Image (cartoon, rainbow, N blue to C red):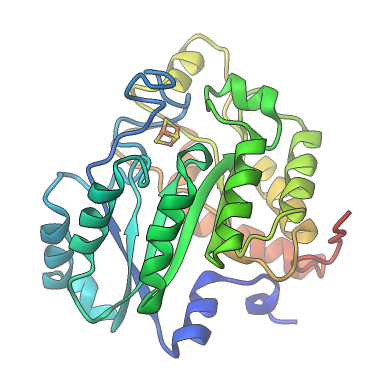
Amino acid sequence: MENLKRYNRLNEFLKEKFGERVLKICIDGGFTCPNRDGFKSSNGCIFCSEKGSGEHIKEFNSITSQVQNYFKSYKSKRANKFIAYFQNFTNTYDTLENLKKKYDSALIDNRIIALAISTRPDCINEDIVKLIKSYSYKYYVFVELGLQTSNDKLGCDINRHYSSNDFTNAVNMLNKYNIDVVAHIMVGLPNETEKDIKDTVNFLNQHNIRGLKIHSTYIVKNTILADMFKNNKYTPITLEYYLDRLVYILTHINPDIVIHRISGDAPKDLLIAPTWNLHKKWIINGLDKILKEQNLYQGMYYAKS
Ligand code: SF4
């Protein structure tokens, strides 16, 4: 079996679905987060950077300008079809009217064929789901939901301020409207155990999700995790540990799920540790090597119950 087929990769899924290469346009929609603005907390998740992920988007321009600038850049020459991807912070955390304005202001070019919205599971309600669904007449629409871990105690420790039950409710609501869900989990959270990873995979396998993003915990400047690291309260994971957990996740997760990513985009200028995070190829090639050498593939140990 070729490595290409050992797990379902997003680029192949998109190629099959749309007949050609599809790229993401990462958009900062100017949102905030209830875990940042004081509604639930002001501190944010312990690993969350000041930009709420998407650190590579350096300045906030209007949404339309960001998309226009993207199409003026060399990146847009590498494909003919694109996903408008609302990435930073909580992209459903606003009034319905504002949400519609923001999503509409990204969908300004016929080359955009999909709308992706990243959010927290406690920031979705039926009206928002209906609004998102309204775009499916023309676009492939999917929603990314943070989970990080199914262990609510660990969820508390990382200051997440939502529960795994919130995740279940959000998935069910999105399933009801046939909107694809992509879950986001992390490896290497403080005090995480092997059982936490196993439980999280089992938990995900009980849900109807279409995609999965996995990334390792890394420390960036000006975060609670950076303070914990400085005070010797957190030790970053090694590449070997991460690959070992990745192999477990992939071999036990539902074989139908599309793996959207296996590494985070650690921002070089903000990253404190671990530095191996900057080398995506080490992760991708390291994983491929293990899968090939041990003849492993996605879902080979999948058990729904
Ligand atoms: S939910 Fe996301 S944006 Fe909000 S604090 Fe946590 S990581 Fe940051």
